[in-house]
Image 1 (cartoon, one colour):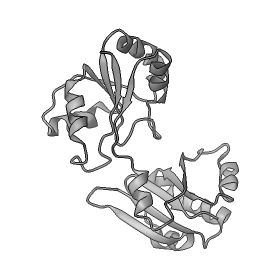
Image 2 (cartoon, one colour; image 1 turned 180 degrees about the horizontal axis):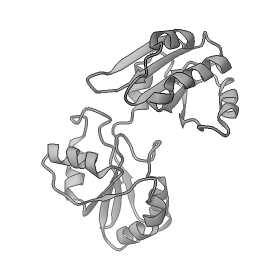
Image 3 (cartoon, one colour; image 1 turned 45 degrees about the horizontal axis):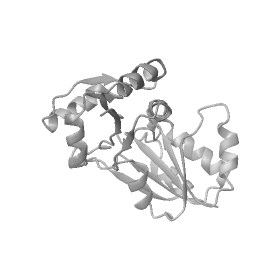
Length: 222
């Protein structure tokens, strides 16, 4: 039976994967991986030997038609990202959309995604929130920040570690230095850290230090 499985994988700790996800990764005809090296480490840890194929943001446009046709013709594939749930600030949307267009069954497993534990442990309201992912790096960035300034819900942003301090400074300048916030990084890993306070306080805590690892910025609503 042709099917595309969307399989969330651990965001750090390799034990954070479901029994169902492991069974599917073992049983499918092919695992489409954003990073075959990292996926290989995960599969090896759980004694799974299966074929993997590189599927990332630089080649997904080229192969989406070919892969969806293969699934339509009877292959069963699993799509995994480097970490977390495919499609959430990661490749996956194009293949999912094409499979749905061709009436191929798409099944998404529940599982890890970084912003949920970051939000829950941030201390900020988590009953209503808006996930923005990565802000535009240049064009349109300030326009997006100005729009978010009026947002009443908790705001969740992803940011690269080398741009975190700059992003916090921009947020402070736009939202006001007293806006409550939280910087979460390296979730589920040995050096997991939450820095909570106002935007100004978090910037002071960071100082000249360049944070390492995956970073999530959460800002309280207006």
